[in-house]
Length: 398
Image 1 (cartoon, rainbow, N blue to C red):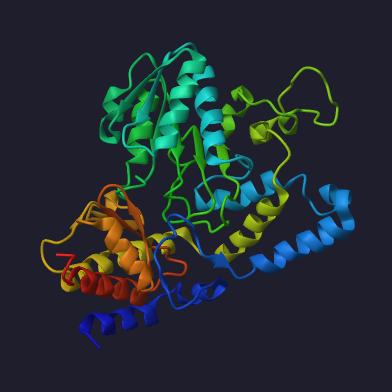
Image 2: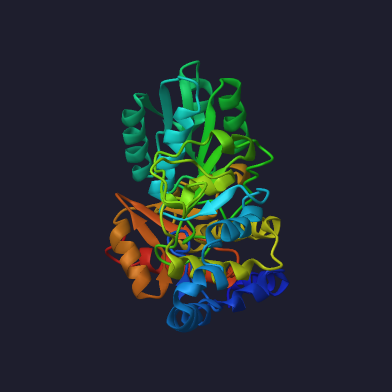
């Protein structure tokens, strides 16, 4: 056993989150793709079976009331709230991330008092850019793509809002949410944050830093399952002004009044649109039980320790000069993934997956390794680096 493997064993033995790993369905593979799809929490299959067999199968329509289906979007939103630093009553779950980005950006422009510019993170996940462009066109605003580091200085008297990713999906860079939010507010603009790659991996502090609107998916670090519903955060002081571009019956003040005109419900409920997807919604609720007794600060501490250790192992096992890290080494600038640039990255990742190390590949030359502290071990990190070194040391990969 190498010194690094012995160190990994020692770190795992001292890990305060070690027992949480048992709350997931895992196998012998080293799973480092939780930044795309979280592992299955062990309690989900039984919960979904009960929803299908009893709540739907026997109670049927009665489950909207008796099983709490109707209130699930707000109830589950309140379960997510402490993981992103929000008080209850500000998050509603439902729809996809894309739909929630659209709601948030359009609503932000509508609340801006006539401002006509939207800034978007220039390195954003493409869909955010597409949605922001459509939202700007719909509201008569202009869209300007700006590197995240320049958003604070780019905001001006015309800026209605800026849509920014908390963690860059490709590089794993953590953008400065407190400073950017404060700068936007100084310019009179609203801050809209995409939390897809940060919620469940690190502290966010939505309330503490005065974030206006935020959206996020639940199938990455929140482990809600493929296509699990997303969520929208609406700061309490803005809820009465939040004007959704998708005024569905679920967001109506009297949803069963079936009135011809729309009157928005009070609170974050006005972020709802149509009938929620109950099967995936309640699978998510069961998945969130893995967070019982877990503090997000402990998750962040382990995340940084894991990624530090992985980078050390990469340096030890991978031939010099073959890979370079796109992910910053500074803790204040790092999310919970490590992105490595190398030649033939797609071929390299396919080989890794064939050897039981599951990460993913992004065009043209990026290997992504996501570290989910609830179930990723230090042994996983060391094994992944060792196998990567073995692959890259082969003829044909040099």
